[in-house]
Image (cartoon, rainbow, N blue to C red):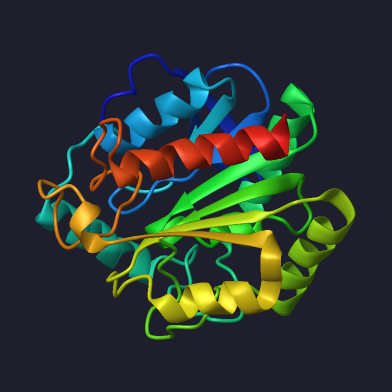
Length: 256
């Protein structure tokens, strides 16, 4: 396992659980949570863009091996590990995973260190809805849900409790927080019903970026899914690059 080039290595502990956190950039804090299978080179590329846009990136090591390239076998293996882990509840529709408590604490520490209006949180796939649940009891006011895929087997589930959803709505009403979501229109792991539920729960405060499957990078592994990483075409004028730029603009609007 190699450390991402250009990132400082630190640790953060909460309730007896210590994890490695990779740090880069300066400015308002943004917690970036990797998708399955882990902090791949593509995830690091995205995190670097966030840092270069004027933010302090906090990227915790949650799963997998840092900087290991994506492969089908590697992804399946990490998914199986997650499914039996006590820190993740992959089938839960109305409650979040236990690991969210640790992530809230990290967001609070990042805000203490960096200050500003609040903290951004970017979740992808497995971690997508973690960004939403983190709005309870932490300074997160700019959650980005990229292809949020939990809970499995419940298309309209949000993997968040009523208390967490209420906290998000309170932050929206009182602090001007908003929620940004991204998905490919044909993504079965992040179905349209989930985004409709987000619209129902958050109204105009939820902004959806939904891309045609044809805009996905054909070299990315599997069907169109990972908007900001594996299926990104990192070229001007490409819809996926425009989606990445919208994430950076959203973080700027909410945190600066």
